[in-house]
Length: 389
Ligand SMILES: Cc1cc2nc3c(=O)[nH]c(=O)nc-3n(C[C@H](O)[C@H](O)[C@H](O)COP(=O)(O)OP(=O)(O)OC[C@H]3O[C@@H](n4cnc5c(N)ncnc54)[C@H](O)[C@@H]3O)c2cc1C
Ligand code: SF4
Ligand code: SF4
Ligand code: SF4
Image (cartoon, rainbow, N blue to C red; front, side):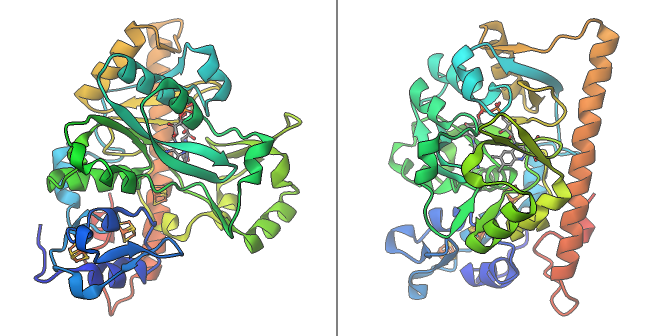
């Protein structure tokens, strides 16, 4: 790691925020070492900004942990034994919950909610950083410590009444869950699991490498596959609904697998290809290169699995232990193939699909970055072509 002297939030402004690469995860603000004296804050637009520049200690921590800088990338890769194209993994399955209640509300197979429930009920964690549904494109981060709270966070289905809570000019599927961890700083004996997108998990891993408190409270990570998060302002909402002939009020579920799937209250599903959905992607997401959540303990998505199943990529030894025990105790069941040959073929199909999506996202990110990175400003510290595999 080479850190230029006097690296500060100014570098993030120049290299990330002004380049349109900030995904508004809130990591920099949450872990600013001058937090108590207030150097940084989240602005009304949800982008980070100086609250008081005079208070900045120029420690560079905000810069180091930002998921959009690459200065700690090698360290993270080394720590997690990363290998191309989708990182380290031990095994892959299609699995689902055995809990009927979870199955009714979950996004795919309810594996995330069931794994968290298994960990809570077996006293392996004290809580889980998840996000509660409050509207169609709207969620709120919470630390769930009981089954009822996990159920409120499961899935992506919405009631009529939850639409009413959608206010403000922007609707987005991205939830800034990282800042909530800061509230747990005084209780660093806690053990929390965290569910997050690849950018969120990467920020956590960087904090853990730097041993920045309270990232040590995160003892287990479940990473969601992620092609992009979406954001709709009022103008885009009108354009999008007209083009696809949908009324957002009729939508009761949204999901992302091979394509973007909207379910209407009539039960009819509308499939929108990934390329077409890019028009409502958050701009920073189009420059992001991690699809398969490379540094999580377990990565999950709907991609490749049949309805009501989740694709589960086991990455770490701890991930394997948790998954295997949840299976053994009957929280989960895996999709069983008739023969060993079929099982092998199925695993290889799932892996090929994930690798193809990961490659597609990497290429898209590389193209987007090459447009952003001009020759005058090579930005050697954000993702660069030389790092792409
Ligand atoms: C923004 C986003 C993009 C995704 N893109 C893809 C994709 O391109 N391809 C693919 O195969 N899968 C994608 N997924 C993952 C997929 O939609 C399911 O979340 C995953 O398969 C788990 O399903 P499940 O039924 O096991 O989870 P459930 O048991 O339903 O639990 C879902 C968990 O995800 C958490 N969660 C929901 N939204 C967010 C969010 N915005 N940020 C952090 N945590 C959240 C909930 O709190 C809950 O704990 C994406 C998910 C999100 C949130
Ligand atoms: S004090 Fe450190 S973490 Fe906070 S803004 Fe300044 S450089 Fe960033
Ligand atoms: S991506 Fe996150 S850590 Fe980086 S500047 Fe934006 S809010 Fe801060
Ligand atoms: S594409 Fe997903 S992982 Fe990448 S910045 Fe957007 S939300 Fe984060």
